Image 1 (tube, helix red, strand yellow):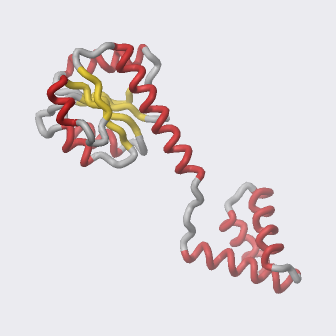
Image 2 (cartoon, rainbow, N blue to C red):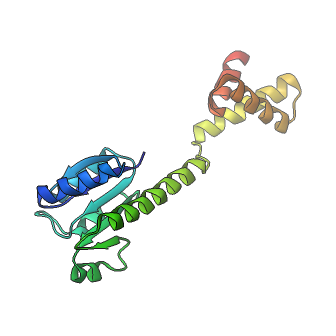
Image 3 (tube, rainbow, N blue to C red):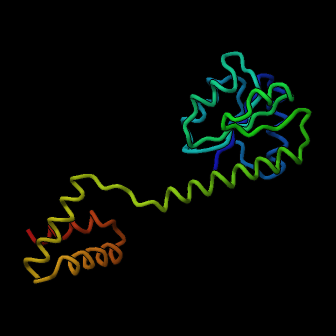
Length: 181
Protein backbone atom coordinates (compact mmCIF):
# COMPACT_ATOMS: atom_id res chain seq x y z
CA UNK A 1 0.00 0.00 0.00
CA UNK A 2 1.15 3.52 -0.80
CA UNK A 3 1.97 5.53 2.33
CA UNK A 4 0.54 9.02 2.68
CA UNK A 5 2.30 11.59 4.83
CA UNK A 6 0.47 14.81 5.74
CA UNK A 7 2.78 17.70 6.60
CA UNK A 8 1.80 21.25 7.56
CA UNK A 9 3.55 23.60 9.99
CA UNK A 10 0.31 24.18 11.93
CA UNK A 11 -0.80 20.95 13.67
CA UNK A 12 -4.49 21.86 13.36
CA UNK A 13 -4.17 22.13 9.55
CA UNK A 14 -2.37 18.79 9.37
CA UNK A 15 -5.04 17.12 11.55
CA UNK A 16 -7.86 18.58 9.43
CA UNK A 17 -6.30 17.26 6.20
CA UNK A 18 -5.64 13.88 7.83
CA UNK A 19 -9.26 13.65 8.96
CA UNK A 20 -10.56 14.51 5.49
CA UNK A 21 -8.30 11.92 3.85
CA UNK A 22 -9.16 9.17 6.33
CA UNK A 23 -12.89 9.81 5.79
CA UNK A 24 -12.23 9.36 2.06
CA UNK A 25 -10.60 5.98 2.73
CA UNK A 26 -6.92 6.89 2.50
CA UNK A 27 -4.38 5.46 4.91
CA UNK A 28 -2.42 8.34 6.41
CA UNK A 29 0.70 6.86 7.98
CA UNK A 30 2.13 10.01 9.50
CA UNK A 31 1.23 13.60 10.36
CA UNK A 32 4.19 15.96 10.55
CA UNK A 33 4.88 19.62 11.32
CA UNK A 34 8.52 19.82 10.14
CA UNK A 35 10.46 18.72 7.09
CA UNK A 36 12.76 16.57 9.24
CA UNK A 37 9.76 14.63 10.55
CA UNK A 38 8.61 14.02 6.96
CA UNK A 39 12.03 12.70 5.94
CA UNK A 40 12.14 10.40 8.97
CA UNK A 41 8.66 9.07 8.19
CA UNK A 42 9.62 8.55 4.52
CA UNK A 43 12.61 6.45 5.60
CA UNK A 44 10.17 3.91 7.04
CA UNK A 45 8.28 3.58 3.73
CA UNK A 46 9.30 2.32 0.32
CA UNK A 47 7.12 4.81 -1.58
CA UNK A 48 4.37 7.29 -0.98
CA UNK A 49 2.80 10.70 -1.36
CA UNK A 50 3.53 13.73 0.82
CA UNK A 51 0.67 16.23 1.09
CA UNK A 52 2.31 19.38 2.39
CA UNK A 53 2.26 23.11 2.87
CA UNK A 54 4.66 25.66 1.43
CA UNK A 55 6.98 26.42 4.35
CA UNK A 56 8.09 24.49 7.44
CA UNK A 57 10.09 25.76 10.42
CA UNK A 58 13.17 23.90 9.15
CA UNK A 59 12.85 23.94 5.35
CA UNK A 60 10.81 24.93 2.31
CA UNK A 61 8.70 22.52 0.23
CA UNK A 62 11.32 22.40 -2.56
CA UNK A 63 14.09 21.39 -0.13
CA UNK A 64 11.79 18.66 1.15
CA UNK A 65 11.20 17.44 -2.43
CA UNK A 66 14.94 17.34 -3.10
CA UNK A 67 15.63 15.26 0.02
CA UNK A 68 12.80 12.74 -0.41
CA UNK A 69 13.48 9.43 -2.18
CA UNK A 70 12.48 9.38 -5.87
CA UNK A 71 9.71 6.92 -5.05
CA UNK A 72 7.77 9.72 -3.32
CA UNK A 73 5.49 12.26 -4.96
CA UNK A 74 4.71 15.64 -3.44
CA UNK A 75 1.38 17.49 -3.42
CA UNK A 76 1.85 21.14 -2.50
CA UNK A 77 -1.19 22.85 -0.97
CA UNK A 78 -0.60 26.61 -1.08
CA UNK A 79 -1.82 29.99 -2.28
CA UNK A 80 -1.73 30.95 -5.94
CA UNK A 81 1.46 33.05 -5.69
CA UNK A 82 3.40 30.20 -4.08
CA UNK A 83 2.04 27.65 -6.56
CA UNK A 84 3.33 29.67 -9.51
CA UNK A 85 6.83 29.39 -8.06
CA UNK A 86 6.43 25.60 -7.78
CA UNK A 87 5.48 25.11 -11.43
CA UNK A 88 7.75 22.70 -13.28
CA UNK A 89 9.39 21.25 -10.17
CA UNK A 90 7.89 17.75 -10.38
CA UNK A 91 5.31 18.71 -7.75
CA UNK A 92 1.52 18.44 -8.00
CA UNK A 93 -0.11 21.67 -6.85
CA UNK A 94 -3.52 22.28 -5.25
CA UNK A 95 -4.58 25.87 -4.66
CA UNK A 96 -5.79 27.30 -1.35
CA UNK A 97 -8.50 27.75 -0.28
CA UNK A 98 -8.78 24.04 -0.78
CA UNK A 99 -11.91 22.17 -1.80
CA UNK A 100 -12.09 18.72 -0.25
CA UNK A 101 -13.20 17.04 -3.46
CA UNK A 102 -10.26 18.52 -5.42
CA UNK A 103 -7.80 17.32 -2.80
CA UNK A 104 -9.25 13.80 -2.75
CA UNK A 105 -9.44 13.52 -6.55
CA UNK A 106 -5.89 14.76 -7.00
CA UNK A 107 -4.56 12.45 -4.28
CA UNK A 108 -6.42 9.50 -5.83
CA UNK A 109 -4.69 10.19 -9.14
CA UNK A 110 -1.29 10.44 -7.44
CA UNK A 111 -1.77 7.19 -5.50
CA UNK A 112 -2.80 5.40 -8.71
CA UNK A 113 0.34 6.68 -10.42
CA UNK A 114 2.51 5.44 -7.52
CA UNK A 115 0.83 2.02 -7.63
CA UNK A 116 1.41 1.76 -11.39
CA UNK A 117 5.10 2.65 -10.91
CA UNK A 118 5.38 0.08 -8.12
CA UNK A 119 3.78 -2.62 -10.28
CA UNK A 120 6.05 -1.74 -13.20
CA UNK A 121 9.15 -1.99 -10.96
CA UNK A 122 8.06 -5.41 -9.73
CA UNK A 123 7.66 -6.64 -13.31
CA UNK A 124 11.20 -5.66 -14.26
CA UNK A 125 13.61 -8.57 -14.04
CA UNK A 126 16.03 -8.37 -11.15
CA UNK A 127 19.70 -8.19 -11.99
CA UNK A 128 21.63 -11.19 -10.76
CA UNK A 129 24.94 -10.91 -8.99
CA UNK A 130 28.04 -12.55 -10.46
CA UNK A 131 27.83 -15.21 -7.72
CA UNK A 132 24.23 -16.04 -8.66
CA UNK A 133 25.12 -16.24 -12.35
CA UNK A 134 28.04 -18.54 -11.54
CA UNK A 135 25.79 -20.84 -9.45
CA UNK A 136 23.28 -21.13 -12.31
CA UNK A 137 26.03 -21.77 -14.85
CA UNK A 138 27.62 -24.43 -12.62
CA UNK A 139 24.26 -26.18 -12.12
CA UNK A 140 23.58 -26.16 -15.86
CA UNK A 141 27.05 -27.56 -16.55
CA UNK A 142 26.46 -30.35 -14.02
CA UNK A 143 23.10 -31.21 -15.61
CA UNK A 144 24.60 -31.12 -19.10
CA UNK A 145 27.51 -33.35 -18.08
CA UNK A 146 25.64 -35.92 -15.96
CA UNK A 147 22.31 -36.06 -17.80
CA UNK A 148 23.43 -35.35 -21.37
CA UNK A 149 21.25 -32.25 -21.59
CA UNK A 150 21.70 -29.28 -23.86
CA UNK A 151 22.15 -25.90 -22.17
CA UNK A 152 18.57 -24.99 -23.04
CA UNK A 153 17.25 -28.26 -21.53
CA UNK A 154 19.32 -27.73 -18.39
CA UNK A 155 17.97 -24.20 -18.05
CA UNK A 156 14.37 -25.39 -18.51
CA UNK A 157 14.99 -28.11 -15.92
CA UNK A 158 16.20 -25.50 -13.42
CA UNK A 159 13.17 -23.32 -14.16
CA UNK A 160 10.79 -26.24 -13.65
CA UNK A 161 12.56 -27.28 -10.46
CA UNK A 162 12.31 -23.71 -9.24
CA UNK A 163 8.55 -23.61 -9.89
CA UNK A 164 7.94 -27.08 -8.44
CA UNK A 165 9.79 -26.31 -5.21
CA UNK A 166 8.56 -22.73 -4.90
CA UNK A 167 12.08 -21.34 -4.81
CA UNK A 168 14.04 -18.97 -7.01
CA UNK A 169 16.22 -20.07 -9.89
CA UNK A 170 19.39 -19.47 -7.87
CA UNK A 171 18.14 -21.65 -4.99
CA UNK A 172 17.26 -24.41 -7.47
CA UNK A 173 20.77 -24.17 -8.91
CA UNK A 174 22.25 -24.52 -5.40
CA UNK A 175 20.08 -27.61 -4.82
CA UNK A 176 21.32 -29.21 -8.05
CA UNK A 177 24.93 -28.51 -7.05
CA UNK A 178 24.30 -29.84 -3.54
CA UNK A 179 22.74 -33.11 -4.72
CA UNK A 180 25.30 -33.60 -7.47
CA UNK A 181 28.29 -33.16 -5.22
